[in-house]
Length: 192
Image (cartoon, rainbow, N blue to C red; front, side, top):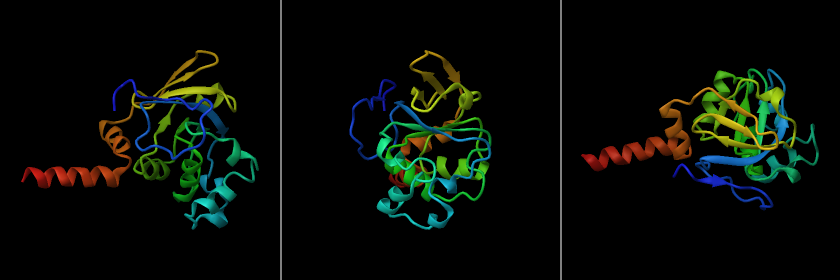
């Protein structure tokens, strides 16, 4: 992808979340979670074994905002405090959020198990100091995930996150670690 690839979600109907994401994600802050948030609560612990998109849509965030699934748009992000994703790193909660259009997660810091699992599923997770207090719900943001930079559109404020390693960038570009490993395997076999 070129450095100028952007995604504009203004007045756009929900479509499948692209993997890899655009270089610059343009969206809104769909929700702000506090510190030590257990991501299983996004869908409810009783639903962590489901992968069916219709089931996940019906339970996603309903305890927090029953209209959440109908108000999120492609390109929106969620924000968390410190240690976001605390608990067991189950995949269905982020599957549900991705299916609704959530394109990145910005947090003060991440639980290591959550970060590893979701990064390797191709979701940009950016540790951005100060993000949880700098934004409000529905603030417009531009996220340059490759550079770990966030611009708050309405105020012009800019926040710098912790840089991603070259390997993590490759994983996200490939749409997840499985896709990257398969591509590397094919390339190695073709070189033989």
